[in-house]
Image (cartoon, rainbow, N blue to C red; front, side, top):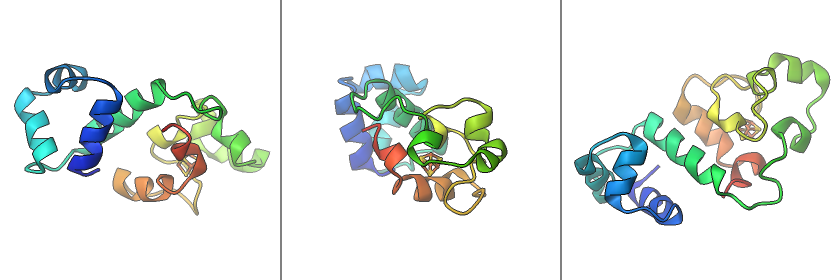
Length: 124
Ligand code: SF4
């Protein structure tokens, strides 16, 4: 996530920088730094921001489980933590999901797959 995306999500949530720092459990200085591009936005912050935005989504697909949208067969579902932990459309939140060719080794690699996925994009 870059500084512009961070800023646009904060505006989408209708929060001031101070309110955002409280929501994310970080300092006001950190929020300034993220928005100015002085500091890289850590995966934990990015993940929480996506989560908050997903909770105010009005997309018609926003409440459909990923395995229904992606039409995953039973055998694949049984192997996937998104199904195991009943994550619904929050599959992108959980590391270790197996869509897009298998488990990714970290959050950034997973997000590369999720960012082009209809399930992830349905939350915005
Ligand atoms: S690619 Fe990401 S958003 Fe799409 S179904 Fe898999 S975990 Fe969910």
